[in-house]
Length: 295
Image 1 (tube, one colour):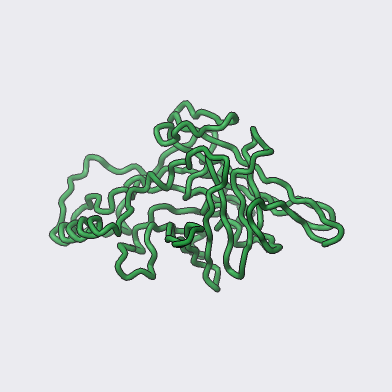
Image 2: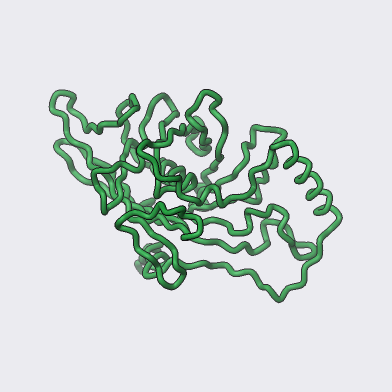
């Protein structure tokens, strides 16, 4: 018997939908331990250690003529990724961990290496699932992650609690023969809510009438074969990159000449990630991590 591989496309098209709804009829009680956690959370907020309001991570960046510069640092085993701003202070932005057996990537707003952070391995802010062939990737945002201490049922832990999710990106991979080389391709549909968009919708955007969300389709900018170097090359503006199968550039389908995202290897286990509207931080970071199997 032959089983057809599950595709995420049917979940994404023709409409972008929410799933895993919360049962609003259930009664809620807050335990004493949760109250203590809340006090700790408020104390951390006063110290400036909290950034739990995840809308900033799904909000498209403001329109700009320049790409915003970030840096992705991966672990030696390629299962942990940290996103930093590519500035003098190299401030931490997000952390992601790959779960190979579960075929998913979990995203957190806190660095597990920081002992003073509120990192909770059972409570990711985003999750990205991938299919067995690693060609389709679906990024979802936990809608209750803006409130770390959302109420739970008595005796219910964070792993068993149903959390409402919203799909915010659908990524597909492919391969194209270019000259004597093979170019990995990445196409993506990225979604945002109009109230978070700040007028960043592109000319090619599609308005999903069922939920009124804005969707942009991004396409790969193809590399060219360099006979002298005998390799595929791309022009990374403002970056000195080394050859890597994981290097890519994306543009909006409606404006193919305008790069909105570029990902290039700049050192061992370190990649430059530069992007702008219509992408959000979580979407760009997810696309970078989705190349982990490219060789």
